[in-house]
Image (cartoon, rainbow over all chains, first blue to last red; front, top):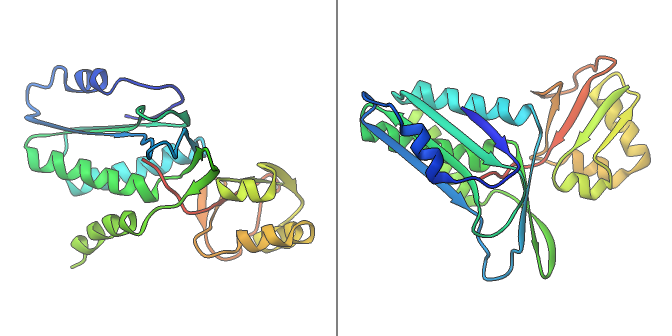
Length: 151
Length: 79
């Protein structure tokens, strides 16, 4: 399931619902990204998406994860709109027969969501607003999956 | 008329989010935007800005259907 939401959400409730009834899954891994206050520098984080296109591109990332790892299921929920520090921004869950695939697929999905999913992020703080671009670290994190896949 | 959509910092730079422009190709659309706002046209041509036509990423200079939706996508940052 891939979903964009404009209201805050409860990662615990999502994990419970995602895990329910899985008698053969064996492993569920999750990641929750939480908006940082940056010691008062960020009052509000604003996330913009391109409705339709953003879900489609996340779907392509999810397809790559399914091709690469043996997964039973996955779930990606991403906030859009204005987010206060402490609120969750993104929730990723993966279900697999064994833990390694679940952990790695979760890591893979987050690396691609950080710098390849169509979102634009603006930080509003006491000194004004600024757009956040992916960091060198974000790009490196994504590149390591491309390296590993090379023959 | 193509429907042009701007995202992220491009929207702030332009001061608008959406506009219709008469253009039959991406290069003609860039030229039409440049006539109004050269700084914006330069930003749209910057490396790292991708273009989607009807929600599919394009390269080069595609022709545009009469009601094409053309989106300029600056570097993306989620999570």
